[in-house]
Image (cartoon, rainbow, N blue to C red; front, side, top):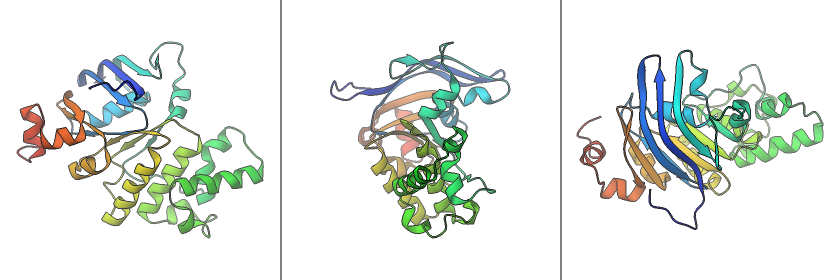
Length: 258
């Protein structure tokens, strides 16, 4: 990726390989991810997109038989060094999944605070402030302020996904990984999530896996195209979509395969 000395790099990925048992899912990935920008990861199903983002916060290793090698340097420190606590990494690098997954036994209020309550925070006034703060950040407060004590699962799909974003924000991460966050949502909800990401990038670094190339073109500053576990091309999004360097990228962008 071309380096701009005025832009801080949040991640440097060096020679990253990942496996599920004997099946190699990622092959020698090298790329940099800019701070306070949105980086899109595109490619056909099974190409390693989700595995890649799960390697960025050490979720990949939670799968039985899964492992990875290489470096993921986050703010100057390799997150795979032996002295790094993966739990702390996942606090700093949050994740929002494809299917909205609010905790169904919890209210909207409790869902937002789940991580803070686990930390032992109890003061009611501070918890109330946190709920409003993070629901506002997730562009959801006005829609749910009168439903705070209803089940999180009672909300619409798009609202549930924004609730999950509020829950991720509440533990104060620096990075948010989105794995197909709008694939189960209608166009209106999708547009709200995309608008929200544009707001969030002012204060957070965002990486989004998406099958929707129009979405990648709309929201991201940089795009990486993955195929069969390899990073085929990584560049500014406008260049990827208008003048890609690699013929495989051009064929995928123009719908000739995938």
